[in-house]
Amino acid sequence: MAFIDYYKILEIDKKATDAEIKKAYRKLARKYHPDINPNDKDAEKKFKEINEANEVLGNTEKRKKYDAYGENWQHAGEYEKANQQQRYYNKNASQEEFNSYGRDSEDYSSFFESLFGNGNQNRSRSEQFKGTDFNAELQLDLNEVYTTQKKTITVNGRNIRFTIPAGVENGQTIKIAGHGGDGIGGGPKGDLFITFFIKNHPDFKRDKDNLYTSVTLDLFEAVLGGEITVTTFDGKVKLKITPGTQNGTKVKLKGKGFPVYKKEGHFGDLYITFQIKIPTNLSDKELELFTQLSKLRRP
Image (cartoon, rainbow, N blue to C red; front, side, top):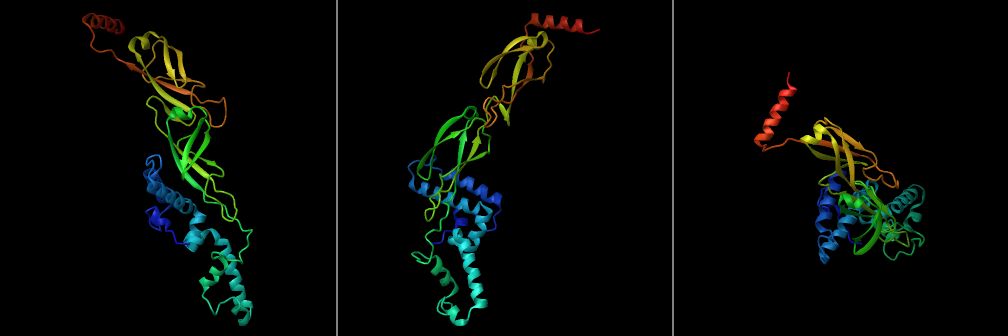
């Protein structure tokens, strides 16, 4: 098997930190994603290589094995077992017994090759290994995760349809079992991990299950009070305004926030901040009336 330099694929140094690996992967995954490069076979191939490299280097244990055993990192356990057997025979077997393993006729790496090389008949056919896990990213609008829905994404040339539960959060990762790489020796397939990136909404700010927005009141509504219609995320509701409402006043609409992840029928709250709009371009008559009001308010 030809050696694949995963560090080179992700354009990072072997001393790269976990954060640097993650940053490099995200940058390259966006650049070569099939949705951005439709019908581009080279970009598709590069995207697969990036995913494969991240699956190994992005996992602490897999990275250790890769650094130690290169392209044979998936068989590290077998190598270590063979290494233990080798040490055992070095210590306990006679020179003739040891020679039967080819120590005098072939070097140490050839000994491993005889155990793990292509077409090796000594290797147990029962050995099975799970396939490589894949990573993908999906960008969605806030309104797209307000309700449970189905999406189809393309990963390594395969269309995968899955359900996105309402309330998924920005940066959250979910696992879709069995949609990763093919297993080895009849082993199970790897898994697909999808990380969601939720775009900001122009009118609502989300904090977990709660939503925040602002509503503008004209001076007369703030002073006199009354009833107004406000827009929530799932429709409009009527809201009573208390006379004398001050700028920056906050009110809570219970249950009008964002759905709670995987808890059907449960919602956070909506917090509204009132902003008082001061009238401009007053007519002479309006200025006169405001002047009279100001005199009434002053001792």
